[in-house]
Amino acid sequence: MRPPTHGRGSAPGAAPSTLRRVLGGLLAIGFVALPVEARADDAPPPLAPHAEVLLDVHRWRIIPSESGPTNYFTIVDDPSGPFLRARYQPPAETAVLGVEIPEAVRQSSRYLRWRWRAETLPVNGSECGAGSPDSAASVYVTWKRGLRWYTLKYVWSTLDAVGTVCRRMRNPFRAQDTIVARSGPPLDSWVTETIDLKDAFRRQFEKGDATADVPDLIGVGIMSDGDQSQSPSAADFGGFTLIQP
Image 1 (cartoon, helix red, strand yellow):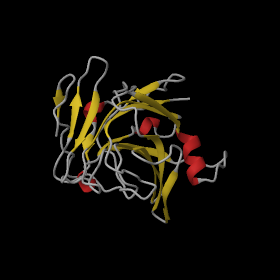
Image 2 (image 1 turned 90 degrees about the vertical axis):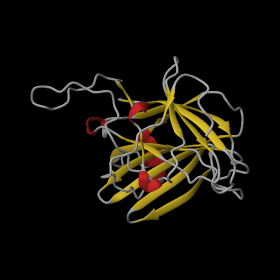
Image 3 (image 1 turned 135 degrees about the vertical axis):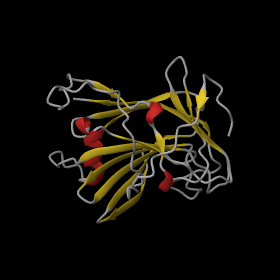
Image 4 (image 1 turned 180 degrees about the horizontal axis):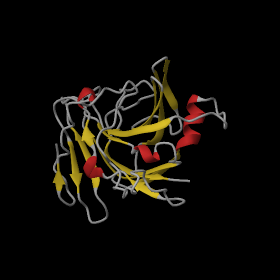
């Protein structure tokens, strides 16, 4: 793994042994939002309109059930803002980092914003085509209703066309789609994404029904991989923020 080139890097800690496996691809762990002061009755105070909840990168953790023994993520405390750096090198197994959404904002959050930049694209990386199912960067967004997990996987592909949706999975316990958010160059350049969480869920899982109920938002995860193509893959991630309506 190439060392950080900006700021001070440190490896995120291992997750507690009580971490449960998420069928949708990730179960986030740990308290991730900046703390909100509790009221006397222990209920969280109401959030102001358009309040923003930062998912602090220092609280992301490796998900053991979804990761090999090598943690190739580091935290970079850059003056412009801390971020997570992924530097995958074959033949390592892939690693996934995740965070849990605080209960107080699981239903109220309307938008998710983050920034990412691809540094190294895996050779012939293609989640949706004939290449290897590797991506320089992946962001998982996961909801849960009853026993069923719902996951949207947003990827920065090497070859796939932006807007492509593929790898649809539907069964009683799991629903998951892969969406190509970015593809190819430019590299080493930050790009900001903002998704409407409720609209995205309804569009992918409820056939666009604007009145459909949206379950609790449970977690967010990230990955950079090149294990299928056996090629390096690298990206940076930061600024994960939940925005209330």
